[in-house]
Length: 366
Image (cartoon, rainbow, N blue to C red):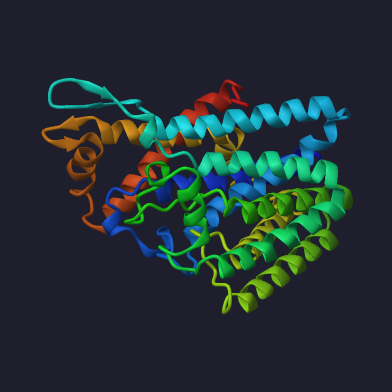
């Protein structure tokens, strides 16, 4: 793939990271603008697009790297190692900072209560399984897997539970395999929106990204290529909306209609970015996003671990995170504006770190 095509991919990755940081770090979640919140259950907001876009751009990156491996041995070693490392990074991120204060000393965070699945874990599994399916199944195998995954997931959720928070098959399987203590508890009950079963349809987002990337590589950046990407994207959105009355669009269950909707939107975004950066060569606006896109994993970990530390240390009974928000941002603009300014400031701090790395040509790879 040409350097220009890499530019479009870096920009798409960078836009995704920027939005994810803003979404994940509001000064006060209770005063966050609605588009920056996930849908409570069924439904869709711009925030719900962030994670599936990560999966999609992982697939786009695979379209560049996968053809480089001539031998199966080298391919499997790389894919398995990278999958394991990214999964472990995700697990350690939830365990971090490994200790917590007590009344008299410090105590270790128990492994028995550490969340096992999560964002990086799903990215790892989507990358690893997606790469193997594409490598050995080829186009027909990948298409067959995608159809079986989407339709099969629908059948499983329909026949082994319902589409509610408490009664879905994703939760039932996770409880059976790992128990409540290792699940996410932010929904009010033990339920992991990155559960094992819902990773199955998420792999399709990665596969779609791979073939979108290959399509641009093979057909070139021209008007016909962009038009076809947009038509396929629009068709995916139409099918998703037609499917949604019987299988609701739901990010936390990662329903099949959600996969088609987000894939369709990502195809439209990718086509637009390639059009702007390659066909029209309008690039004056891209560098800020390139900074995020070139060190995606590092910046994401920095943003999450930094917030964990700010929440963990306390000043006068309040976390440093809350103290900064109340002391600095509430006086500037109360409520929703203060919350947004806090998130944008944290994103800017992470960007400055990424900028420093980019200026020194330091790129953290796994």
